[in-house]
Length: 97
Image (tube, rainbow, N blue to C red):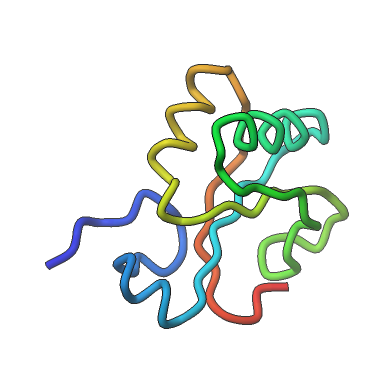
């Protein structure tokens, strides 16, 4: 039995994520937090990029950041340490736009 995922969404194991092409997304209430998140992740060698908020999550216009799911725990600790306000974390399968 796998450990419960800390993210909203699939709750898949790392092996299942690779097979199903799962992506992790962080959403934000303000643009500046999305940009700070991306910059902080990149400084710590985590491949993060700013993307539009997927339609599955919100119909409003806004920014989110995609990052590798296997970095989830490190990302969460960086956000707490740097006081980056993340609205929510999500795991989305396959066609997530």
